[in-house]
Amino acid sequence: MKYDVIIVGAGVAGLYAAMHIPREKKVLIINKRETFKCNSFYAQGGIALAIDAEDIPLHVQDTLDAGAGLCNEDAVRVLSENSRATIDDLIERGFSFDRDKDGNLLYTKEAAHSKERILHAGGDATGRYMHYFLLQQNPHPMLSDARVVDLLIKDGECYGVTVLDHRESRNIYADNVIIASGGVGSLYEYHTNAPCISADMQGLCVLKGIELSDMEMMQFHPTVYVDNNSAQKMLLTEALRGEGATIEDEKGRRFLFDYDERGELASRDIVSKAIYDYSKKTLMQTYLSFKNFDRDYFMQRFPNIYKNLQLLGFNVPKDRVPISPAFHYAIGGIKTDINGAVPSVKSLYAIGEVASTKVHGANRLASNSLLEGLVFGKRAVEDMFRKKHVKKDLKFEVSDEVMSLKEDKAKKNLLRKIMWENVSIVRTKSGLNSALNQINALLNEKIGKLLKFRLLTAKEIVLAALARDESIGVHFIEKDSND
Image (cartoon, rainbow, N blue to C red; front, side, top):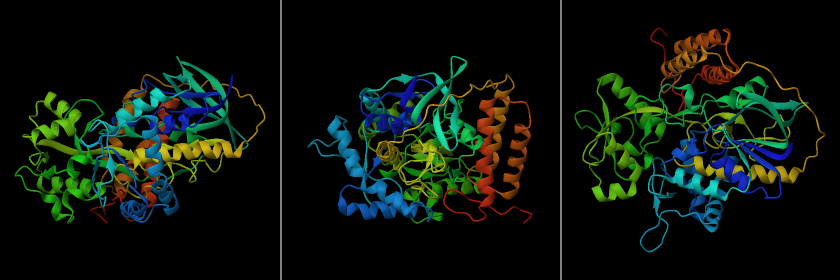
């Protein structure tokens, strides 16, 4: 069977793209696990937008400032100029953002934004609500519990994918393929991502010679509760700090002002590095305090965080909660143009967190991620139908490569440890070189293809970090003690 479009991934980006493909087109959405196991589902904070035409220059400037000079300004303008229409489209289709008692949309402020411009739904469950809504609206079939393990490419053109479905590989053909598979969370020991976000497609692109961009730019969220046994840790949204939560040490001192005059409202990279540095110097635990919140308001505004922290034994907002930074978002990814098209391969697109449109530069502005997935998801579909590319039918052999070995699990865990210790918030040349040597050694062992994907993605992150000598945004490189 041949499809008009295959979409790899069923998060917000992939589903919003699917929504803009007419029902009569043959579309297949391929999803690795259950539909809710994606990063979109866990997005707490909200979605940013330029509220009106006057706000566009401010939203653009805030995004450029957070990106520390490495954003593509054209991409940022595309993001901001299309934001209001995108939100209005969701509302017209029936999506409900939180409103006040008079029915007005509720805007809130997050770190590094110059004004209140973030919308939320379900209090702290924006991603979950939006993901569920888009699933309900989706008119196209979905293949779940299947993972893409190859891209069918010949002479610079994509003809479809190979899927691993119930332990058997088979080819599925399409005129166009959209990759919307998310980030790289499972490469790190501590992360906030869905468990199945494992950097497969980025590593596959390395194998296929498709360029990745800005892979050194990995964002760490500063406020994460990490004292649980699973790899996925509990995110405590930026909106908490935007509305009055404070960061303090064991003695109750708000030390962030030692690092930035904005304190808790500084950008994520600054807050993460400050917590890392202060903890290292003082050996003190860092806490998130909610003492500025009224209990009833906290329960209503952040219902899921309230419930989850209560279950963990915290009497919030009275009790403060120990926090640490953890990996959160891949800024770098598959290089695309401002329409989501992969320049080197016809009929191939990448959107959302898996892509690098350079809209985030060196540091993503809070709550721009859901917006990016929506805006560029729609643009990819529009670009695809504008081109109306006709291709000949080709058949490809199905690869019989071994996907995984029993020993791979221990090696995956070793990789997570290597990345967390050497390629996270603060990096050194010696640490990066140590990581590179260990990754190369693992690549030279007998491993399955799925682990190879992870290792190749991790290697790209390390190589990109080694290539950038100066600290900028989320890439902070510290001089070695022997330099």
